[in-house]
Image (tube, rainbow, N blue to C red; front, side, top):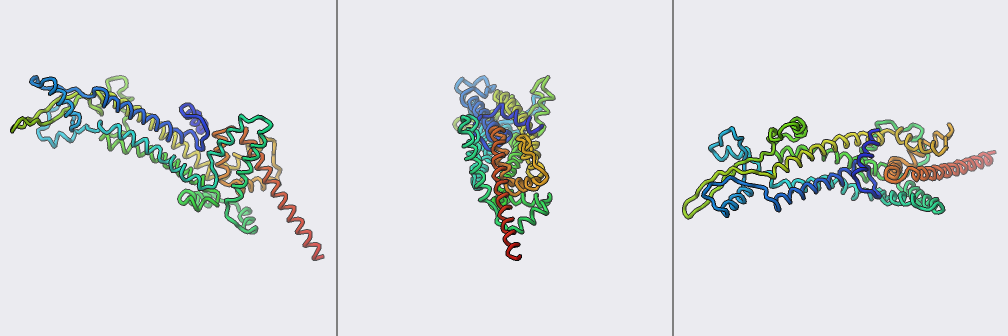
Length: 415
């Protein structure tokens, strides 16, 4: 239920087209990057095109001196002192309430865009080492949807043949007795976790075990989740207040005046010196930072977006971890499509079906089929599973027949 809800919500805001990840991943590397880039553009326009600061200057300042003082304050350190408090005498005490962060807001949002894009860049860079182009396969499956009926079976056959060769090529060679022993004893949860950790920590070692793509994908999802959490830590350090609870403070003051929050002060103080011949005069001006009114709303929206993203990413990571680490979930995923097709296996075929899921498709094969189902059409996915299942049964029947024939010849020779 949670997975379908997150997927439906993400599709409302994301671009269409072939992709090899799910909707929550797209919210990270596409939706969030676009949103934060828009924030950076809006704030940048307000800073460099608008009029972000106005200062109360002494009466003796002519017009051009006023403009100079405001520009000087804009590039200098400013600090906040509540109107009912005295201004500290020592300059060092004043700088404890420095609010010069506003000049770096654009750079911070652009840096956040990079952080949200990095996990996806890592996924795109390393996924090719699995031996198959997942996005290309998804794209081919998506094209089949609009293919005329007379050519549809051929294209599905081509895709299934490519997947079949990939599944047969990238695997660790074991003798027949070893394979039978592994199949008889099955895989317990401890062994499954060990295999997944090998795939996550060392992708190259997981490729021939069929855990490379799943290990890499789960690692990227973990990076997405860690990245969202680190955003709150980074913004807390940057803004110099507890950003973790900022959204709750906004909700608390939503019906009143936002100035009560006092996180982005609009009225600040600015100290500067002016040299006139041999004399140096000190000035303390009171300035209005109108841009902070805008930045305050931007960071409020950013908090709610990051909070939603953290919750969605956490739920999504748990769902994918459950689907990957527990073999019954993979069996259920494949079995439901075979049941829809009317291919109900007998008791004899139950063992063959488990071999099909765990030893033929393995984790990476099931992941590829999930990607096709999530990003293309479930009808195409059903047809692909049907063809792969038929190929697998045909190969096993051929092996069994050859084995029976060899056994008969041996018995006859002994007789």
